[in-house]
Image 1: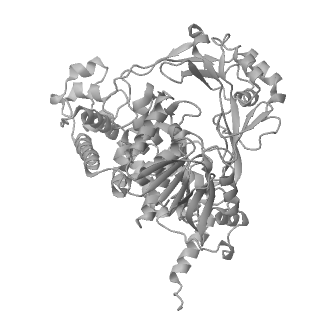
Image 2 (image 1 turned 135 degrees about the vertical axis):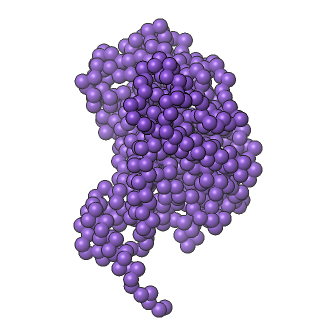
Image 3 (image 1 turned 30 degrees about the vertical axis):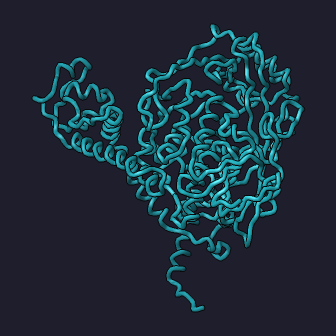
Length: 630
């Protein structure tokens, strides 16, 4: 069987990679162990949150599926940090774990150019170093021009629960072992990482009267910009906390923890530690939060978010039954840890293609990330770039100032990660520009250029952008006229007339004046969009643009400086050993990571400004050298 692109793995990265490749017209195959389980929510059935919600909105802006599936299968919708600034607001949605894979499977089954195949990846084939195909463990040969591996936790996966070990990528599913052997044959460096999941509890055995209720937002904020409104009955989540007795039981049983006994080699995610790790690392804290989250709308399974553990089953039962509300809880499944093989991502290009194996792309947890959102974002980038490469087009390479997707990939390729990577808003230099509310405004041109959205979608976004800019400029340059203001309305909110002449934009940028108060005093915005959905977004964008205009200008100047550094390319064949003025530490780092631009080199740990100057001198010398005749 011959395809343009074969994607191995039907998780969140594989879905977006296969969808993007097929959407761009490539004959695509998705090879997955169980076609009915694509997009399975192996851990928490939730999408979004700080940083992660930004990624989902960007995936949506680029024509991906994750946000649309989230809105279709969500059971609770919230906008986090609503009272804070727009840069750190983010949507989070609790999902029905049974509906989500079905929605994805149905969507992929109806995709033109896409064939879903049941099987497990085996031997990778190359000719002269270039990818030519893959053979499944069942012996089926799939020829292709590009191969995208999105294997999650399945490469040589080992599950740990106390001293018990079983082979697999998640409960009930065997690992992928022959594929892991292919990496060694290709000469790729590999390492081991670890992740974990909490137990699952029976909802009917929990006393929620002892817990704090956490309802969803009303109205429900959609994840996708394409969703006009959500008419959904939302479920409740609850909050409880560990107590000192919980911690005592955990401490007394650390000798049964595979992590503390040294049976797990791989490092776990520092920002999502196990409960035993929390108790040890934060011994001064009297309690830790546990969020009780339904896994389905009508089922009996509760996900105790915050209790990831690999302690033995009897210890899990003992310590959880000390928690308020969980005294009589019964277990559906015990928690466990998964240790798996990954490929350190310094071996990749920013397109997510392996440097040493043209045509081979890696996306998701195989690159050392954690989370559905990070995986889906990488899958989308890999799928788009593999398709563009097959068609001979320029790659999709957004900058750090344009997308969190770019921040994540650049971080993966330029930092020496010893633990699973998780995206936070604090990782971005320009997070005021990279907001959840403007993802489509930032990325519509990219999405249209590569073919992920059509003319109509692009034009709608560009029309909104133009209208917002015109009104924001008008407000910023219109002087305040006292005779045109409703000072009675101003007095009601404690706003006094300015003593000096100022612009309307200066009024709206004050912290005590929001858009509604501004309109009561000075009248409505001059433009009204006919479509209520777009008009709501227009009002939101105008308020943000005017309120934070001064901060935006500072970040735009920083972006200009970054772009200058990113425009200076570093040839891949540059011999750092010949640059005798480089420090040994910098030379070793540069040879390992092989940065593609001066900007990337400047962000490498171990490379200082003087080292960057040495590289610039070398590049200018190369440009002056005459080209020798063959």
